[in-house]
Length: 149
Image 1 (spheres, one colour):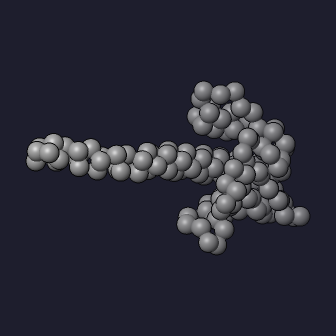
Image 2 (spheres, rainbow, N blue to C red):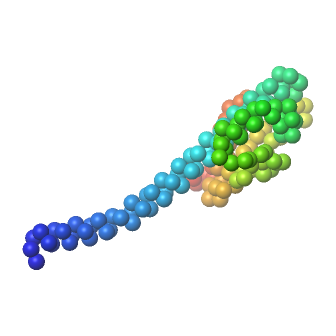
Image 3 (cartoon, one colour):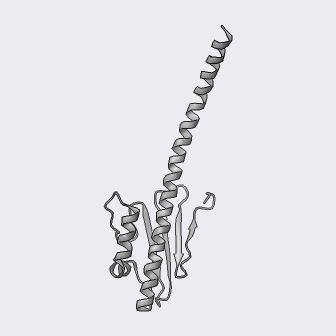
């Protein structure tokens, strides 16, 4: 066998070994991109809720429940849905399953002067990603202790 033929054969074998590795990286990259997009949507929704809650407090002196926020501030939520789901017809539902793949827990304090909100990704079975906020308006992200954030 000539030197050229041998080099060509070795080169083709080398490419054959690398091809599956690239395919796996592409799949992992797509999953990671989808995960990043879902988290951006969650943070965007929490910003929208924080804005609605601030407006609710400024107007009524108390923070509102999910149903109250949807009733009093539907324009905030309609805008969020239009921006976040431009290709789909999506409406907010009654908690906990307010959107497909998302679980909302919104607790307004008894005196109405505070709230605690947890938005959990129900599609993230391994790590349980969630975004959290309260009346301070700071948004935090969390996952199970053994997972990267």
